[in-house]
Length: 228
Image 1 (cartoon, rainbow, N blue to C red):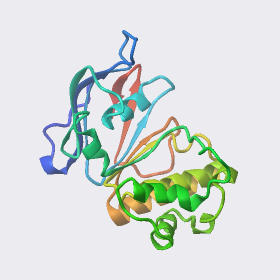
Image 2: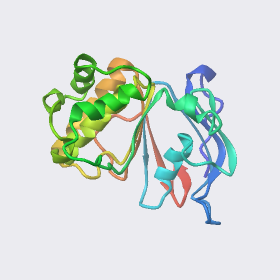
Image 3: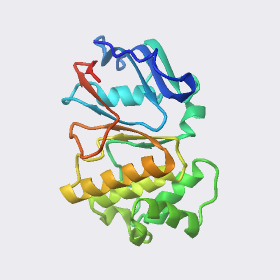
């Protein structure tokens, strides 16, 4: 089943647009996602859910231009993907599923957050690093080695790094899978506050349905959108 939203609303409100998009991994004949059409609007909180192997992460990575579709059209913030991926990603924050700890312990939290500022050519200082950490309720972690933090604390730090870019869209891949119930609740509060106070569009990939008031839930199975 293909989700169609092309007739709704103002074109300028569409921050993500997919038209008949299919993607496969190198060396594989079977498509990982098949014939997907959908759109996401500015200020929405959207959940993409489904069982393992449904194509959720593949869809997110295709939208971001990390994977190249073999058919279909994608626009991210008006940019054609993946052709203009570098330009589009300047306005996006991304939390991948797997956190790779930097080599060389200890690696301090403030240095991780500073990477977010550096990625957009902005100088980091204690003031703007603390401001980013404040948004994720993690100021007390400023001088902590990230490798010694809990999974929930690491997610907060990575969110702060993404927010240093002042993103228009925040992409999160399985942010709840390795955290406990309390951390999950805190992350949900942070995301809702970002959406409400800064109008950040949020796209979450998760097999867990968190307690967030989503504008839309997109369900996937076998590489296809089955409901939204």
